Image 1 (tube, rainbow, N blue to C red):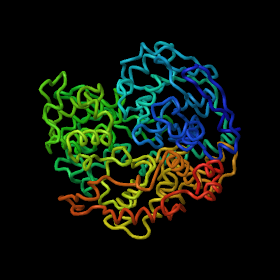
Image 2: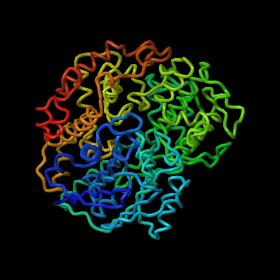
Image 3: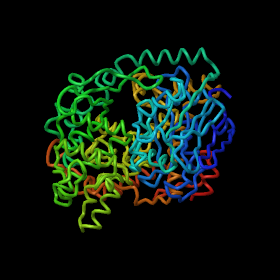
Image 4: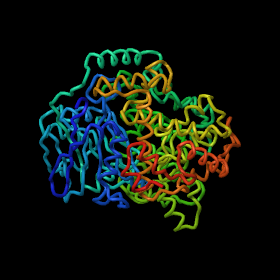
Length: 628
């Protein structure tokens, strides 16, 4: 087999035994890699209905079809498990040298079973697996953990996925970090902690065999050359944070816990301001010719020395959404999240929820008491010192940080039950995952995409904000076309998440971010790698199948149509400022949009998947379990 080894390695942390599962080529043609293959491995290995923190919830890792090849932005892997944030599928992507090391070690995927009796580091050394004591790593941040492993094992080519103090402490939205990249958002780090898995390290010394090296090299060269041009210029120069000003101008930039969509000090937290005042250099993921990550440092003030990569989603959640206009404080907040291993988006939205609770009188100053501030904190919007203190309390699960370490859905339920309040109305999450950086009240297609999303509050799995923000739709209204747009947008995104390829390459095929531009070239890349005979329709089905297995997983875990919902605020509280003032997504609009979407997907009126559709997609076993 070309492009793959045909082997998945299973690792049992309790018995410290391993075994190899060999998959047929036809299986790879269905699942390809990334989040699709990782989710399929979850489907095959998880105990349905299990607690996310139980031994029956495996961690599944799947490499990419192009990992270790010249294909640009192809050095990614997918990770999946049952999310402790949502109770549904938790799927993430990460681009790093870890995926390349894994491919060179000869493994297409990993399934990590059970729970260790003590903290462990798993070391995959080509065909050999070692279970190493990890107590010497406890308490270390994510970066220090990786360096300590390289020093201990005496090889700087060893690549590791690790958890930091947030994972160790059981913060529900803890990340898994590798090469400074995060497999984040859905709580993988806390699942690792429940297994007492501190690190997974790989040394790979083998080659990667492809079917047609010459064609693959030429295709990769052509794409890489375009990727250095105009289609990626804004990412290369300013990074994703360049979108801050545009989002504010459109009135969709989350401000003060999504109360408004326009931030008055936008010029002080923009990508342009970051570039001028704080950027150190840009860095890239493995196999990436674009290099969009803006490594930024605080040079002056109380946060001097704080340094980390800054992206749009992380920045907005920890600046305007907290009412903070000092970008130096935002960089400090992001350093805490990245160094200690928790999702910066959920962290920011959780802090903004706490700030609104304080300003509404639901929480008091004394509720935020901790060792550093025994009298408590004035948790007002704009109070950077308080926000940073609360981030550390969440990391350490100190005081109210213990409750907030669960995210806004659980925290609001506990607070409201104890105090007779209704803070759930401003707990900004969908399915338990905190909302991303595009307010959906005036992005009506995106609102559908978020509500029905299998991952929860995620902009990456639904690309439906793109047509709304580019004016391809009337973003303030709904019509009969939007279900189709939302459905096809998520399937389009799922193709990139399955290969996986970074979506920033999407315009580098023909200049247009569409199927017609990308799919023919992607088919050629797949065929040159594997020797298959994929065409346009085969590429399109990659996305359909990837999304369908995730939805099937959720159905098996108890999903119902009422789970496809939006935060109360988006449905009942309009903005008072900006071009989106006065707009909400009504319950009637949401119900209408969901029906349009289910119809476009070929599902039943209550969102279930017909057996014949699952069989057609090559999933007869899934059809037997959840098909209708």
